[in-house]
Amino acid sequence: MKKKYCSVFSPSTAMEREDNFESYWQFTQQHGGTLFEGDKDLEKKRKTLKAFKDNPVQLRTPLADPELFYRNYVEMKDDPATLDRKTAMLTCMYKFARHEWVGIKGAWDVIPDMENSHTVEDKISRVHLAEEFCHVRLFDEILRTFGLDRVEWVPLTPVMEKVYEIFPRLPGVLMDSPAFVTELMGVTFYFHLHALFDDVLADEPEVCERVKALLNEITIDEIAHVGQRRNFIGPIATKVSKALVGPFYTMFFNDIPEFKQLFDVKQMIRDGKSFDFNNVPEHMIERSWIPSYCTI
Ligand SMILES: [Fe+2]
Ligand SMILES: [Fe+2]
Picture 1 (cartoon, rainbow, N blue to C red):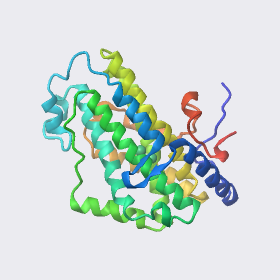
Picture 2: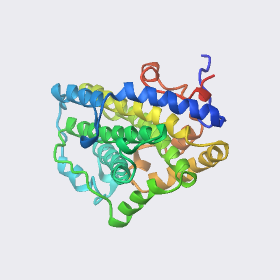
Picture 3: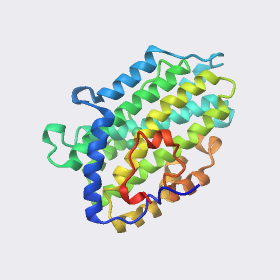
Picture 4: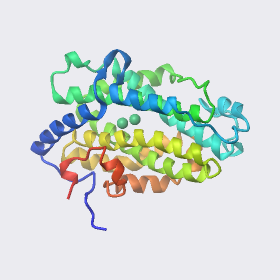
């Protein structure tokens, strides 16, 4: 098949990036609909989540031991090797989503709200964060699909919470590359998680379909975020970002013991470095956004 897109690390000019910010801004407004700032929510995403909640799907066989999840989801207390794959997959997913939640919670209070956003970049960043809050609600719904309705979103240690609050205040030169690589890591993880669903949930076809649909809603946004965060960086920072993929993914995934057990981390790093949108299914591309300089 002929390639339609090129590497996310492809070069771009300052002028191209300016045009792409405008193009992303047009995209994101129609993609999410009205921003409900007080609720950290978006009109269309709220509707989508409600449609899922109004039509719940349940496991054919309930989790054998939900307490195993509750005991290990915030911090691993048992030997991870003793967890069954379903439970390990769920604790792993929660831990990844929790980092995202802490990051956006810290950022929401320090970046300008929509009324005080005077540049396209600021407006984009505000809507971007609201979308991330929607992702946490979607993850919460994935966990509820497994009957886990007592999940709490727990803050990190005070020191780590501070780190996440300081991060969005850093100048762009320090913040933009890690922010881009973080979005790329999210997309890489979601594609691997999607494949893992097929494997681990082979005996639960309805739940498998449902959680894939919930995850797809997140992934479509994240693919657009990868392009959008890429748009903040010039040629040098793009090279720096590519070099950061290995160390960044390794550091993050090492922190969550379930990763080694469930995923091929080396393959995830390779996928991050070679990411070029060509493997994204067409139904996702249609609803997402890709920078013009990554299109052939
Ligand atoms: Fe997200
Ligand atoms: Fe994101």
